Image (tube, rainbow, N blue to C red; front, side, top):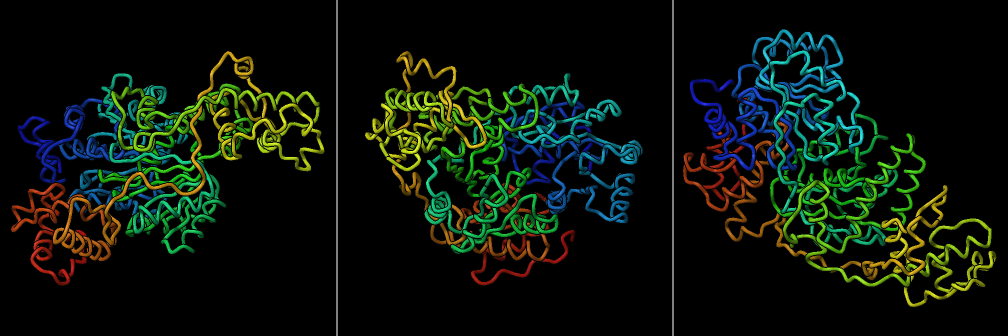
Length: 628
């Protein structure tokens, strides 16, 4: 479908954007990136999720002669990606290990015959000489390396197969390459550039801000119940993702949500491949389904209407947290990133680092990742500002859409409390017995004469009972924040506490320790109240007849998607249906002016949508043939 002719590449690209994808104008840096790649230039692109990264290689592939080859690790999603392009009238195919030999041969012949605009490949296929020979025989317009951060060994999602992708530039030096990712620190950015041999590429780095996502981090206190409160109060009926650290936690949480009346499915590496694939497909196609998963789930998920991402365990890095929370709100509508975080998370993560394989440098890097994540959790300042600074941005003001902006936490001088706790660690150590975890020191400070305290003589220490001015939850907060700031450390298999090189300055009164005031246990009033429709979609800008029309359009879309066996968002995004419902067009020309309605979709669905707009009863039955 090369959109050739005498027009300049930028003009051709804009024509493709409007004709195929149904958008009138490019956003942000899209125009510059696309024009550069259309002209044959290499590019490294860092743009946040939901900003239209895929258009940056899809449109050049349609403008340039030949087939655009997309390297993607998302085997389970390739079919959906191809289906979405097919609905737009784009000729797309994929090659991966899930296909039988006959299907693979059919795709290969289509590529060799010049019948494909885009070909998706799993990275491991480029290790096979047969794949390289196949590509040699075809005409390639560009190589796109999706999820390029997977090449970074110190990133959050390293994939060994990506290490071999430098072969693209070596074997096909005249073919432009574009590497795209939604997350990269300066170090990861440099590693992508070096390992993919893109030293001469032009670099495009957009703001990482996702203003529609509200970031919230709460003290962990019965996390399942806290999650239940979040869903019941704000996200009943919404699609969302809940991340847990372990497989057992995934299973327990999914079962709990189902027992509470929510539609939820588990996803983790312990499930067989068929179950994982089926659960992922159900999540992509269904409305209002919750996926409870380990971090093995979610990369490249294109589902635009994920309204919340919840973490019940502490992510290992800010990069991972940003990538995972970025799966919410791809359609630009209000969404929530919620994290429950507690002392046990800090102890567990520190211990995992101490026990991890690798040399000292490796453990130090893991510690640096964790320290940055803890700083984000413990900050009393704007969370979004803290997050953006991690990626090298310097926001000018508070965002007004995170918990610390909407409900500023109190900060108190915790120097004396820190001294009491550190002194308890010192005095217990002087007795020469075993080391202890946080619970023992808190009991000592609270003056609890438990058998364990009495057996070791800790009730005779000078610090026994000196901490009765704080509640147990507040002391746990002190321990957590001292661990986060490096004033305490965790050692051994049982999470025992020990001093650090920085502890002495606090004990001698040479360093002030400011701490966040702990919230009292129990669910808090939500920081945002939204009017919601029965579908769970945010309906603040639609009312009355427009809201009812939006629901009718959603019902029609669901029927069309079911008939064609594709996710509903492949037909139209909520944002497009919302625009149609807010200002219903009277004819096909008016419908064509709506964002997301390209030529192919207009021809395929236009009359059906006009019928839905004209009638209040059941919409007409959609066509069965996806390619008709």
